[in-house]
Amino acid sequence: MRKFLLTSAVALWVVLPAMAQDAQVGKEYDITIDSEQNNQYTGPYGEAKVGSVAFDIPNAKKAEKYHVKVTAIAKNQYTGATQASCDFQQTGGNAKGMCIGAP
Image (cartoon, rainbow, N blue to C red; front, side):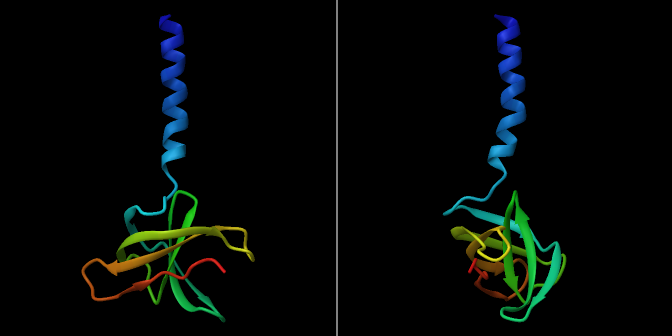
């Protein structure tokens, strides 16, 4: 019985963090911009990730912090990446608006 409990606990310890990492629709997150990108169709944006879900914030710079609320999550038809649509507010700044969602 003790071996079963120990094995179960280890399995949950390994699996649950991986399941809990991805962003979820309706939840709010504090993110930090990891990189800056420029796209000919959307213009400059900063990118951050929560798990495997990417958040693209227009005109954001690396290391800026944002508070986001996820409104939708979809797969980008061009890159295959999972991308969030969200409403954002810059932490300590005045930028606010909507994320660049997946096309």
